[in-house]
Length: 176
Image (cartoon, rainbow, N blue to C red; front, side, top):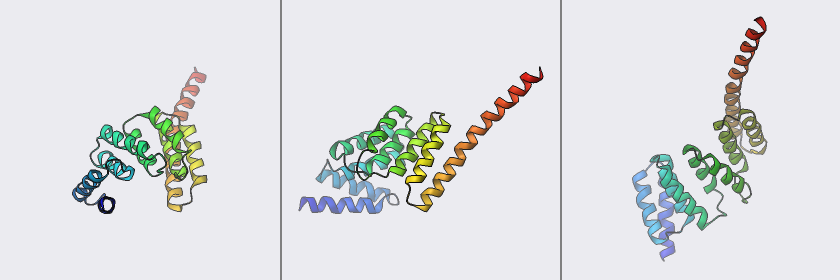
């Protein structure tokens, strides 16, 4: 009976998020009171803290607990990685992506996209583009592919101004 109630509250929370935050939190708190180690409830609580409250440290704790409870739950990893990126925890994000890519069932294309964003944030634009192109090859969704193509063109724009500045400074040197 207890497991049934837990699942009911978890489903209510999943159904309500992100449109009914009060209902989401109430249902999540009930679900976690019945099973405080449920990875899916912990992951959703992490999302609430990261996406809605912008409390990344608390969100990281929930995600870490979710991973500790169920390492094979693939849907936790992209949310956890995104939170690490928002919090500028780049080394931690890199390690988590490397591990998540080995977990069966994870969305490899999404993880490669996040890895490309990580490299972009570290000003490694060419490596980022390479990973974004790999994400496109792995993707199986047209909307996702279009999104990644837009990301690639955005990152390419960051490279071009640098090259133009170098060319201008080289021309000035040659003229002198």
